[in-house]
Amino acid sequence: MFTGFDRNLTSYVDLSAGELTLIHEHFQHKTYRKKTLLLSSGQVCDFEAYLVKGCLKRYYIDPNGEEIILQFAVEDWWVSDMVSFTEQIPSHLYIETIEETELLQISHQSKELLFQQIPKLERVFRLLVQRAYAVLENRFFTAITASAEERYLNFIKKYPNLPQRVPQYQIASYIGITPEALSRIRASLLRNK
Amino acid sequence: MFTGFDRNLTSYVDLSAGELTLIHEHFQHKTYRKKTLLLSSGQVCDFEAYLVKGCLKRYYIDPNGEEIILQFAVEDWWVSDMVSFTEQIPSHLYIETIEETELLQISHQSKELLFQQIPKLERVFRLLVQRAYAVLENRFFTAITASAEERYLNFIKKYPNLPQRVPQYQIASYIGITPEALSRIRASLLRNK
Image 1 (tube, rainbow over the protein chains, first blue to last red):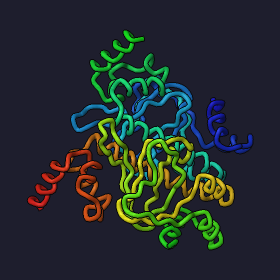
Image 2: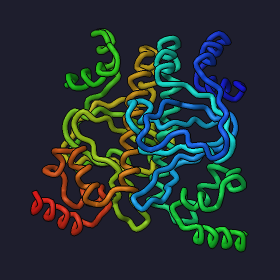
Image 3: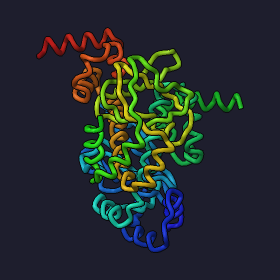
Image 4: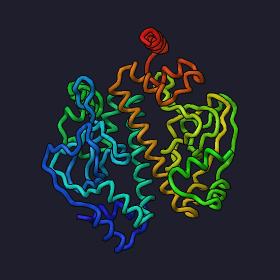
């Protein structure tokens, strides 16, 4: 259960077996059924989680009631609403499982305690946040500057296994186009292969 | 020169006078004239900087050659292209002064050395990155869900002094509307005051 998790953390800093055991004690292992809402707009997000198995989506609801998918998360990703979690303020986001999903999750209070116990985890989480920032900035940049086809190719590159796991209309929402436009792009890419 | 800078850092962790002196030695004080390009797309960003005085903008150029302003930075903000700086890869961004601007800047190599010398700075920069992430996510969320008028009011709240310091067409670019639409919004807000 902790194999990928440990590898993930120790890719940033060296951690002894004793330190890893201490870290494990702060994380809860939870399994959620498909289509479980883990966070709703208006709630304070009290988990930061490592995704062991499964798939979920983070999204907004726009003023027209449309779901705008900000991010998918799959195995070996970290998931939270960082702003709500860190500042303990209500979220604007929804987080929902797409498949049955296993998480290792930590609360705000436990995380602060863990930083006191193992200060070098500050570095791990600084680097993790930097990576999340890079992903978000790339998403923003791509939304502004890339064509729909480029955005789809970008999606495939970032999430190679997701087209088999996620409904087409959700991929269209992530890319910011209609499902019909996505079908046309896929057909055109197949023709030109 | 270091007054605001020291206050900024010590708002996150306690730092002794000796630690602050060591930190100061890693930062270079530089003054740039108005309209100086500090970073261009394709370059690797080799500075992370605290803005002592002045104002600058971070922007993309979209496929039509239009400037898309991602962020303004004013006194007491931190500035960099975090992705390019951290991973030492070419940037997609431009960073350019709007006024004469004083920065305290550190290179990638110096910053890594500083983390070795004062590990608790990891916490400072983790919290700084989290704040940057929050600002970017709010920008993304607002761009998707808010009306042009709400985006303008959001801008005023975030940067209360900027309307006097920055040309109107740059504010329009930040908000994602034409300068004419911005004029109409401002006129309508004045009428309804």
